[in-house]
Structure formats: C-alpha cells, structure tokens
Length: 221
Image (cartoon, rainbow, N blue to C red):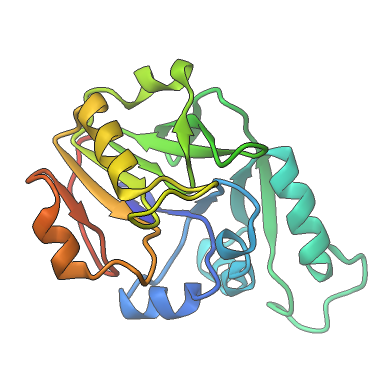
C-alpha cells in the first residue's frame, strides 16, 4: 500500500516482492515507511529500501512500534553494524520513529493508527490518512478504534478467504464490518488463491470490491 501525498510517497510495510511492485508501478522514491506489524510477509522486502537514501539525501524514516523495530534490528542486523561501510549503499540506511496508538505527523500529514486484533494473541496497526484507511491482517477492530474508521471514502480491508480463519477475517466478516463502518467504498486485500477475482466480485455488495496489484484510488486529505 502506498499513499501518494503532496509532499511525497508513504509506503505501508515492505513486502518480500517490494522491488518488483515498485518497478511495476514506476514508483521512483519512497519518502517514509509505516509498519503494521513484524510478520515476514510485511517486513522482508526492507532491504530494497537501500537505494532511496541516495534520492532523499538522508536515511529512510521508518515509523513502527517497539516490537517491529526489535525484529528489524535482528533480521537486518547488518544494517546496524558498527563496521565501516565498504561502499555507499552496501546496507540500508534507516531512521526509526517510535509510534503507538497516538496520531503522528508524516510529510506534513496526520496519520491515525488503528488498533487491530490479528488472531487471539497478536495485535497490529492499521493506518488512516485523511479519508482513506488501510487495515490488513485482522480478525477484529477493537471497539475503541472504530470511531477512527468512520466517515471514510475508502477502506482497504484484509479478507483472506470464504471460510473462517483463526488470524484473518473471512469475506463474510469483512462485509459485515464494512456494513457497520459504512465507508463509501471498501476494497478487500490480503486475499488467498482460493478466491477467484471475477466470481468473488460478482457476489460482493456494490460498494465492496476485490483489490488488485496496481489499483489506484483517490481520497481527501
């Protein structure tokens, strides 16, 4: 997920295929990264950020919770070595900004974190900028977080498959949540191979659709 803002591009998570996605969508710079959580499928493309400091003129800002920073420092320990670099760009240059559930500023825009439950023993963050919110890898939006998801133009919502899953919403659960929150449009993401794109779209409500690589939407700041 990428927020294109007047001041630059804010990426959400660094998925393993990050380089391919950036090339496919002709994204030439990433100005900041927000992390929802530290699972591998949301983290392990981080090394592909290593060239952006040449464009930015400074390390890439990473906005994440303490547990995400801890995982990054372990998995990508070479990025934090005290050894002298053999050459510029030999490791990602990163600058951590610690966040929790309080709003924070990125590129002159307010980002609102959304507390989400990702199964019985794990919490993650969603993010809202303006009238668009991105909430993936969830089974539940905490009651105290739902007010932060009202009056949306676009809600991007994780929905893995038709059958229930212990750590992800099903299609039915996502439709139910969208009906409660009433965004103008909901796009379902983080879907599995079990869902045929056309057949699933055909049985979704009119204002709920499957997301896809390269999808672009507009929203108000």
